[in-house]
Image (cartoon, rainbow, N blue to C red; front, side, top):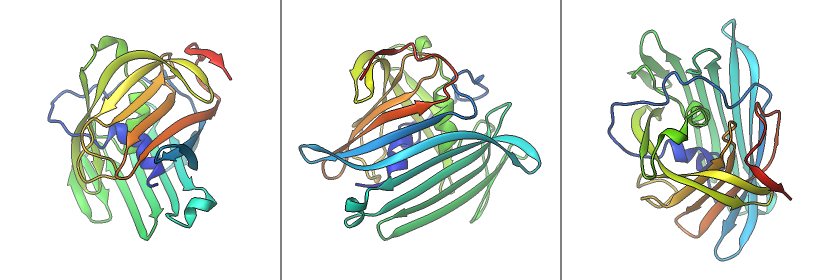
Length: 263
């Protein structure tokens, strides 16, 4: 049971492709506002799903270097029982330009079992650089961090794509650029503990060497409305599989027209 935050965001950054186009660049934000919050529960299974942890995502408006910005925050933690086996306390945050929704600073502070990682990235769009703990790196103009990639993915117009189309995105993580994609799998109705939704189905191609199995072994569902709410993620992992379900939301920008029936 590992990497709660990483599992939610992995559908937009643990992927692999070479492509020149970038639909994540300069998309207008129509999906979310400051004040939005989500709560997720993470389930682990070797046959029966058991709640093992939870994650929360929020957007607030703050000041960064004297400028009004969005502060994206994601936290993940294992429940106390699972702390005995693999304790997880993860925190991901990004400070984002409110006009262009490009990243200004990204911070990753994770504690997973005996492993601890801290990453601090400052993005300079005019210079085309990312400054990290280890140096200065040249990056393309539309480079995302993993939090802005997650939120920008919600602004994509999926109606423009055909089933099996690949949607590229460039991510900077751990001092490297990753040219990535998500595969559009069409639309379907999905039942969750929150309720039944009309949804958009996405499949990432996972890279070898992650906690997940390589290949297209993960599926993500988002709401088929203007919010594009992350509803569910399912994936096989090294031992067993996981499911992450959205359990609550607040302060959404748009009506949740995709919700067919709430439990």
